[in-house]
Structures are given as C-alpha cells and as structure tokens.
Length: 215
Ligand SMILES: O=c1nc[nH]c2c1ncn2[C@H]1C[C@H](O)[C@@H](COP(=O)(O)OP(=O)(O)OP(=O)(O)O)O1
Ligand SMILES: [Mg+2]
Image (cartoon, rainbow, N blue to C red; front, side):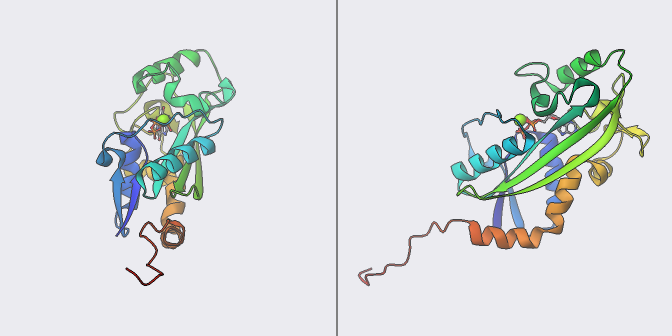
C-alpha cells in the first residue's frame, strides 16, 4: 500500500486530515513515526510557499510522498494579520491560548470583526514535484472564546451559518465548511488521480536491473 506522510506537528490538523482520508488505500504516517528529523523554518511569504516547503522537505528527508498544510487566520481590520505568522502571533513559542489572548487584545474596540481562515495543502514527492490544494472560510471574531473543541483560534472564530464558533461544533461539522475541510474535499475527490500521479512521480529507488548481464 502507498505510504503518505502527514508533514505536520499540529495534533488538531493531524486529526482532521486523518479523518478525511480514512478509507482510502493509503497508509498514513506521522512525522513522529520516523524519529527525529530537522525542523523546517516556515519563512515563506505565503501559505503556498510554506506548505510546499514543509511537504517537499519531509518528502526529501524521508523518501516518501508527504502532505503538508500551511494555514492561518487573516483578519480584515488587522490588514490580513496574523496570516502566515498565525502560529507565532504572540511570540516564537506561543501556545494557542497565548495567540488567542493577543488576538482578543488587538481586536479590542474594533468594530469590523470579519476574518477568514485560509489553508494551502501541498502534496510533494522527494524530487520536489508537488500538487497544491486551497481552501478558505469566512467568519467573525468574537470578543471572548467559546467552546472546547478544535484548536488554535477556533474558540474565537464564529461561523454565522452555524450560529456557533468552530470550537462549539464537532470536527466533522467543522470540516464540512472549514478552509482545511474544503482543501481536503478536493484531495478526496481527486484521490484516484493523486495515487496515479504519485505512481508516476515517485523516484524509483530500486537499482536499475543489471544491464551487462553479469549480475
Ligand atoms: O482550523 C483551524 N482552527 C483554528 N486555528 C487554525 C486552524 N488552522 C490553522 N489555524 C491556526 C493555528 C496556528 O496558529 C496557525 C497554523 O500555523 P501552521 O504553521 O500552519 O501550523 P502549525 O505550526 O501549528 O503546525 P505545522 O506547521 O507543523 O503543520 O493557524
Ligand atoms: Mg507551523
């Protein structure tokens, strides 16, 4: 069976990605299944750059196809911040709680509460060839957190159609409308084609059959 490595350290993302890919003929592995590998710096200017960096690096280091997600929250009133810096909004090793607290503070007294989650998924092979999928989801920021589910900024992200935050709905409900859910839905729809693409693009690591006849 084909192996696909989820190139992420984020447990919330891992759960959502595993859930949507269950049932497909592919063995999903995590970075933790391989022991220590170097950290990759997410210093790209776009979600696209960073998703590709993470996926192609993991594929190159591990020798398997890898799928990475780069995502974040884009806030209208903050000129698109925190954007690609969402994970380190409150500082280099910030926790979700610290990032949420900073967002609450920065949004104090701001009337325009519009925000969107954006996600780019990259599926790469060790040669650097890659496929890209994108998703976006619009909502509003509350003034204080609500709900216990999900991760990251979910407790502040109110989705009007649900009348709830992403932390107040199940993972399955969130995935129906979320940025990552939408990107993954395209992956799911195209999965047969993706498997074919992997088949063609994965390097053949077995030595080429001996051509001199002496082996
Ligand atoms: O559905 C979501 N619900 C809530 N928050 C979310 C979501 N999706 C992304 N986010 C936030 C979390 C983190 O602050 C940043 C992602 O940063 P990002 O670098 O892509 O992920 P990460 O560092 O947590 O894990 P990794 O890079 O190993 O995949 O955006
Ligand atoms: Mg990251």
